[in-house]
Image (cartoon, rainbow, N blue to C red; front, side, top):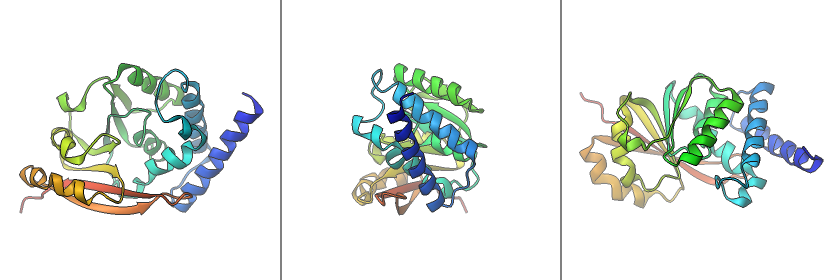
Amino acid sequence: MDSTRTGSFQHELDVLIQGLNDLHIPFTERTIGFFRKYLEILHEYQNRLHLISRNDYRAISARHFLPSVLAYHYLENRFRACDVGAGAGFPSVPLKIVKPDIRLTLFESVTKKARFLEALVETLNLPDVRVLNERAEYYTGERFDLVLLRAVGRIKDMLSTVDRVLAEDGIAIFYKTHEVAEEIAAAQKKLEHMKLVVRVEKLHTPVTYKPLALVIITRTRMP
């Protein structure tokens, strides 16, 4: 690896470490090693597969790793997780790295991206992770107590999928902008029909201080 790439990776890891400290997320040298390998495989695939925007390769930690782990303190000891439309592995794989006891299912219907995810999981040697090359809305297996959704479309359009894969005591977390009120309002009737309730956590990413909202959906508890 050339010295320019090495220096770029070290800057990325410095940003990552600063952000993890700001978020009070515990980590070890081994944790950072996982993220370094993640950076390497993303760059390896840069000219082979469109995973993230070309500009993002200069700031993967700030634009993808740290926003992904922003949900760390909201997982509420939930361990059976899935990522709907996992793509490049955000937000689920960074969360798996910092919370390794998560058992993770990655749904990715695009075959080339599913193959990337398989290579990523193998390269990182992550235990308890499976990649399913299928759409989550057709899934008929176990339900999950943590459902992660980032860059998958409007909340209203994804609720049927959430309802299909979410366990009775589970939570679904959408990664959205702070301007999410209109989107929630558009989904309100469907939420009520499915007996789902919403709360919004308006946060900011560490280091770059970009606004990010976690829209957390749970089932209505019966009295």
